[in-house]
Each structure stands twice: as C-alpha cells, then as structure tokens.
Image (cartoon, rainbow, N blue to C red; front, top):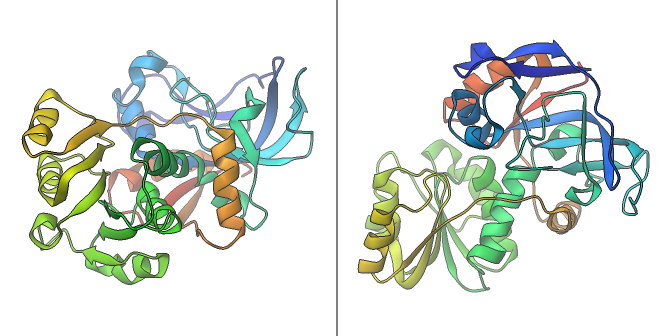
Length: 315
C-alpha cells in the first residue's frame, strides 16, 4: 500500500510517498481502508521532532491519526463493527496510528460509525479536533449550561468545533479570531468575538468560567488568566502547564490545567449524533491528494487555516 513516510526530522520536504506492507488486524482490531486522513498541528510538530516524537521514536515512521474509511476486515472478538461499515476515528493516539496511508489497523472501539451526512473528507476532519474539544468541555472543564466560555483561535480545527460544542452544552461563547472570520463564527453560534490582532482579550472580556486556550503563547495565557472569574479554569492545550503558569493562575485565584486527547469511540458516537442532527458543522478548508502531504503541512504551519485540512488517500 502507499503511505507517507519520513527518514529524518525536518521540514515538509522530508515527507515522501513509499510502498509498505498492508497491516493485518489482530483480535479485537479492524482493518480500515482509509478514504481520507485529517491533518493536525501535532502532525507537523512531530515531523519536526517535537509533538509526540518522543513517543514515536526516531524516523522512519508514518504520521497521522485522523481516519475516515470503510471496514475491510475484522479480527476475532469484534462485535461493534462489520465489514463494509463506514467509520471514522483517532486510533492509537499518542502512539503511531500511521493514518497517512491507504490502510490502518486499530481496536474496533476506537472507531465510530461515520456521520451519514458527512463525506469521507469531512469525517476525517473531525476525530482529533472533535475529541479534543469534546473531552475538554465535558470532562476537563465540565462546562454547564449558563457558564461563560472563552475559546482562543476559535476559527481553527479544534476551535470551530469547540464553539459549537460549547453552545450545544448551553454556554455563552466568546471566541478570538481575525476580523474576517467573525461572521462565519457567529453562524456557528459564537455570542461574542474579539479580533486578537487589535485587542487584548482581557481588555474587553471578563467573568469567564472556562478558557480553552488553543494558542499557547505567554501573552494569550496571561490574558486568559485575567479574563477568568475567581475560581475559573484555564485549559492550556498546546502549551501545557508549566510551574510558572500554575503559579500565576493560583496567585490570580484561578486554576490552570493541561490536556492531552485520547481515543474514544463512544464520544465520537456522541459527536456524530450532534452532526447528524444539524447542531454541528465541520469546516474543511482544502483537500490534498495523499502525495501532496508536504503542501498540506506548509499550509497548516501558516497558522491561518479556517477549519481543517485533509488528505485524500484514494488519489
């Protein structure tokens, strides 16, 4: 089968098309014919040697965790899926899933049935970003109806889904994004928007219960702490929580926690129901052929994407 591999850490140019053996499912696993694979910031960070590179080890390896496709084979003990089922998932994270390929194998319960109203490309855009947003809001922060939630980088892959999930949970949602994306984010349900190019969020926003920070800069973290109400919670996603950040938060009377997403087929099923009910939309900015993974990484690294980027593994 075709896959995108790399022999060394580096820029997008280290990614190359290779031929590798098709995997075989073990008991409780399924073999999925991949139709589309999502591209995420953790992909290019791992390609460079950061991200979860320490878990994957040294190259060669195949990147990618977001998968949408069709079950082609099931191992013994699989009861939730059958051959022919259309599925999506984020298998194995943070271990290697090798999703930039024509086939993947993984435990059946790390997948869910693909939302019927989504294309494969749209479905492949959901798992990592969707599970990140969902697990933060429902588990890490336990957002309740009526609370005020601030989401930075609200127009990105995680951000645009977090806006919609927070609204579905009954929260009042404020997002940060460039001015050109404000109208679209209002369509998705954002109640208030701040242009981070011209305004420090803490100058115009206050009494926030939960901040989901998807940027990770010192400036945005400091502003998030100032925007929180006493006892509020900051979930710092790309940066994690340093001792300094925890200390700053404690001094301000708020909490700061890090976050790492994990595979969860059940949660994906909940997300699929929201999508099928028309309560959540998925934005795919562009779909690239598998062989153009490097171009997708270049675009992702620009930091200006609206929604998600996806690889079509069938062409």
